[in-house]
Image (cartoon, rainbow, N blue to C red; front, top):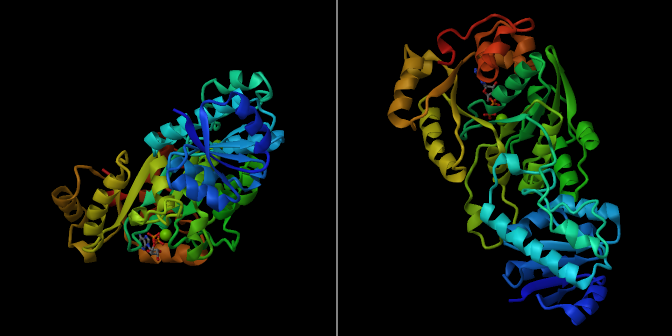
Length: 450
Ligand SMILES: Nc1ncnc2c1ncn2[C@@H]1O[C@H](COP(=O)(O)OP(=O)(O)O)[C@@H](O)[C@H]1O
Ligand SMILES: [Mg+2]
């Protein structure tokens, strides 16, 4: 069977001529004038591979990712070495314009195969993400893609993920109602820094980003959105990431912060594919990547037939898919508890592999009676999934408000507080907890984790 292909770009002429002589495996079903037409053709199911021959500057990671999502692979022709590397970094296959007909056919076959596998994999595990896309990119870089050499290299295995890092991604997530995701994320990051870890703190909340406010950063740069844009274009490198991740100096050391979108209506700048690339790149220069995720997991936009449409909650979902640890934060009161219980089902449906660590924040007598920790544990045992409570963080409005007002972490504003110690205990290993040189010896007491 011949592979149906849609084509765009004048540089296809040379290949078409060659295919005329030898081509058996490809059927060009449509030649498109512009990208919108190419996308529409792919979405209609007309093609297995989209070929962009020349004028590849408009090919972005979002485009490649969305075409892969509908099972269409991407092949680009460009005579510029750097541009081919960029395209491969995005997850496309690339070759020079004078690629031989046979080799072009094989490249198209590989792109179709890659797309089919991407569609099956759908959401690959965190470890398989590469900087270049949501799957290891078809790395043909540096293989001298001209003439006979092309297919020998192209037939090789898929590229390894490019970031060689053991850094963990820790996501703070939780249901609607401000349970304290940002408070916990910011302070957890500060505690890790104080133990000598290199930490990148990422504000991926597409509804109410607030890390800059919590840290007193006068930052209007929306570092995460900018990093996503660069990743989308295939231009995110460690230097650019370093520039965009602004330093926040805390008493325990320096955090690097990718600040959130500056207006809620800019959520569509955080596309899943580019966010994956940013998180993966962040892992490259850090020991821990702490992410403040949004709350909403609803995927009802997916009911739309427009699979190219950006999805507001895609950022949250992608963070949770990639996270090595998910801390699910609930407010410890009669509203917050059932919300966290319900959100467990939503999480299990949206991200089946997720193993959230349950944390209740703002634990206080007034909301739960004389023995709030026992009340919480009893209620969770009865109504929640079979998953232990990993942490109880006390309510301490005076302390937390004062820190927020000063734009400081609890480590700086209230090092002796039990709320601070309880957050530290969530993220620091027992060995790290012993190292208390910059850390108070205040214990979480009855509020501490089991
Ligand atoms: N343990 C706590 N005790 C008292 N107030 C808290 C505590 N944790 C968070 N808060 C307050 O609750 C509000 C919401 O916290 P925030 O971390 O911004 O929530 P979210 O990120 O979930 O929307 C803030 O005013 C914060 O100061
Ligand atoms: Mg928040």
